[in-house]
Length: 490
Image (cartoon, rainbow, N blue to C red; front, side, top):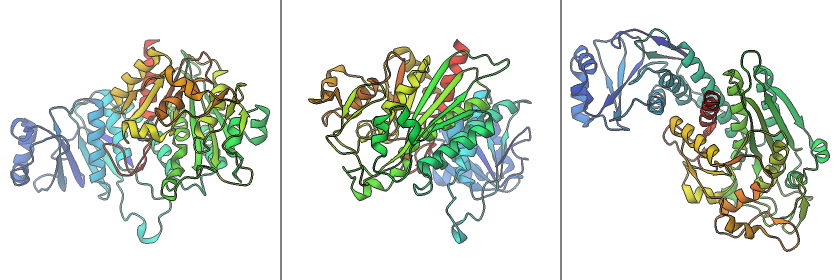
């Protein structure tokens, strides 16, 4: 999609659809809207009266008009807000959704600051997103949104638009990877996708195959892979700022990359397996973060690592009751083979901690318990450092992504005590997302660390807010905002 800025009058911009935000009762109060309605022969107020449209949040009204250049107007209610960057993103997503089959559109914003322009650019691209890779013939879209224009009064704004487009491209890449079927997106293919992005954007790439993981003694990771015919991969992507962009901090991001999770010998019910291609969403987000940071030339050294494997039921599959020694040295008793993600993450987190980052952050579709606790649209945030948690929640507030800080309750730590090994890898049925986080904490050493359980918002069964059905790319926008804030405050 081609995106541009225009200083044209809203009544003279050429587009199939003109999207206009309307504050509560704004058609009666806003001079610009009243002038636009006059040029349309009063069509806007007349349609609003028939449909009882008042500008409440979430309301939309499509009006076919004459007297102006655009073919139709989409009124979008913003209530008493509409001026924050996340409002601009939501407005743009809704507008792009409505125009997805029309060819061209124009968008008016409530605020034109850099952050709002950036969010709108991101929202227009992400709102027009469709996963069509496997459609053929009549299932292919007949028409797509090809051009979008943001109408502004300011003369500049190109840099903000470019940043929004970079962010959108990373989010859409993560969505594509998460939506891809597991027969095509194997661990090797996921690693190759990361490699292609790194080569394109100047990020250093390295991967470890099965033999490499054996040398690193990543026995927990390898245990999960034992039942699969597909080889595992651990990928390490590195972005180091150069020239004038002096590195201020070193941050490590770690992602869970289960390209398919059958549950192993503790096999999932059939319906629960259907969407388990999405169990690599944490890895997809990790790829998106490092590529966006590199393209935006942030002054932060970033190490992005993920462990990719399947969890299957082959002859050599690991079993409940098995004991394996982790790369960190602790022995772990296996309780349930469907709690595989924390085993992969444990070894990768230990490896990442040896890089001595200032902060280490992992993204993982880790537990159904987090989904039960917080619902499908909020991620659980666990941290061993209050400053890190606070900074991250501030970034999330700006970007409009929903996180809730969860406790690392040490009283539940005893539930991980094994009778025959150093640890069990699961506690009892209560506080499952917390005991999973406590297990991961065993492998981060003294590193300031945060675990983000994105089991809910990473993959949705229906569209919600600014996120589509399926893979969402949740977490990339907050991570980039966190890195930007970190570089400004350092």
